[in-house]
Amino acid sequence: RCRFSSDGTNVASSSADGTVRIWAPGPQMSSARSATIFCGTPVTCVEWDDRTDKLLMLGTAQGSLKVWNADSKRVVGDVTLGAELPRVVDLKCSPSESVLVAA
Image (tube, rainbow, N blue to C red; front, side, top):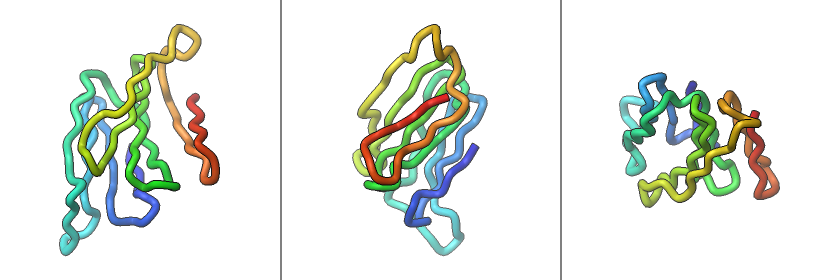
């Protein structure tokens, strides 16, 4: 899975090997936010918070949700969703509210 940030300057791409990369999409572009995030479990979906463009949500095959701050380059939230949602397959952030939905 992959997603552009709302301003188009960064891309987040996830992998079944448990990594997420943040990178600049063009050969002439560089990004201070470039990072490789190691989650330890397959990452099934990624979603940028369009309101701030600095928070990246990660959903995993083990039913966890992580929030990565691209500016500070660290995990700022980590939640296991429980038996009712054993695998996160999609995430969406509200464009106008502090709301994240997971499926």
